[in-house]
Image (cartoon, rainbow, N blue to C red):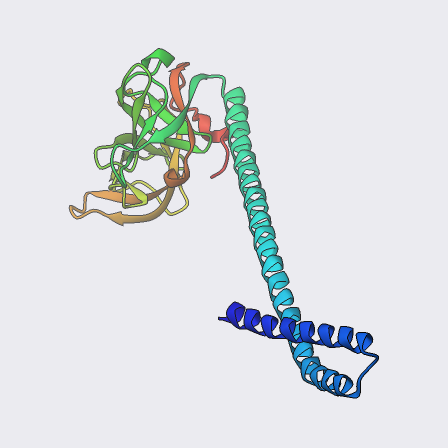
Length: 290
C-alpha cells in the first residue's frame, strides 16, 4: 500500500516537474512572457509542498530500510554472541568436571600408594541395572582379575562386593542392598554384629545381633570383622548414629551411617588380592576421615 501511494505521488511530482521544465524552456524561448511567468510561478507554488512531502516520505522510507538492515545485523550479532557465550560456558563446565575428576583420581592414587597390603583394580561406574537400584555396573571384569565376592571400596570405606562378572564388566552390590550382609565390629568396644542393607531408598545400614551387654553409642565407628571370609578385617563401614534394643530384648540394634555417599560415586576400587591381616589390627586407623 505504501509503495503504491509513493509511486502515485512520484508520478504526479514527475509530471509537474516536467511541466515546469517545459515552461522554463518556453520562458527562455519567448523572452519571459507575463502569462508564462504567471503559470510557472503558480505551478511552482503547487509543486514545492509536494516535493517537500515526497522528500520527507522518501527520507522516512530510507530510514526504515536502514533500521531494518541494522536490526538484521543486530540479530546476527546477538546470535553470534549467544553462540560464543554457550561455547565459553561449555568449556567452563568441562574444566570444572575435569578438575573434579582429577581430584578424585589423585585421591585414589594416593590411597593405593599408602595401602600396599592390598592389590586394587580401579573401576568406573558405567551404569545401573535398574532405576534407583542399589547395584552398579563397573567397567572391569575377569580380564582385569575381578571375581565374584571381591570387596569394593573407596578411600573412605567399604561400599559393597561383586556379585556378577563377565570378561569386561561386573555388577557391584552396595552395602545398602537388602540382600547385603557383612560381619561388623565396633572399634571402641570390639562388639560384633551383622551389618545389613535396608534397600536403595534408605541411606542408612543396620547392625543387628549386637550383644545386649556391649557398650555401643552414637559416634562409634564400625569396621569389617573379617568373619565369613568375604571381606578383610578392619575396613571402615560407617558410624553409629542410633542404638536401640531389638524387639526380642536379647540384642541391640544400631543404625549405621555409611562413610560414602553412594549416589555421588564415579570411581571405585576392587580389592583383587590382600595380605593376611589380623582382626586385632584394623587397617582403618590410618584411613581418610569421612
